[in-house]
Length: 203
Image (tube, rainbow, N blue to C red):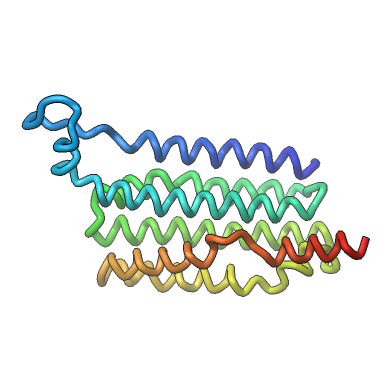
């Protein structure tokens, strides 16, 4: 299968995931306030819900960016890549659920830990997809050269694993670590971009 078809399917799934998260942002209803005014927002406790949405949107955007970079380096994909990609999409499809739960109960340990578990398993799934793509393309491929040992991905998984137990001590510490990983990945993977430019200049 050509990688473009896999990328198009994945783009559609990620767009649906974001749409589901947006639909969870419900309009606040207050019997004490008449009409659509900003007073409705004051007592609606929307800040945790909105912040959890923002964090999850950033994470989905990060995965979309880096997924695009991965597939840009290959022209075809194997069966193992297809299933590895499905594995990644499965864990990402749980992000709206954990986002909603975390937004409704921001100071509880279980939602904070569950959010980290989903991020951890999505990170592991992304790493597996990366390895499957490299195995299909070859150890001397452009992708293998660009990614290398992927220390950044491994560090991310380690941070998630550390944040999960911390959620049962203080959820805010877990949220902080999730934010640190998000900041690490906000810029698309420049290693692949540099490798592609170097390869094009040589060609």
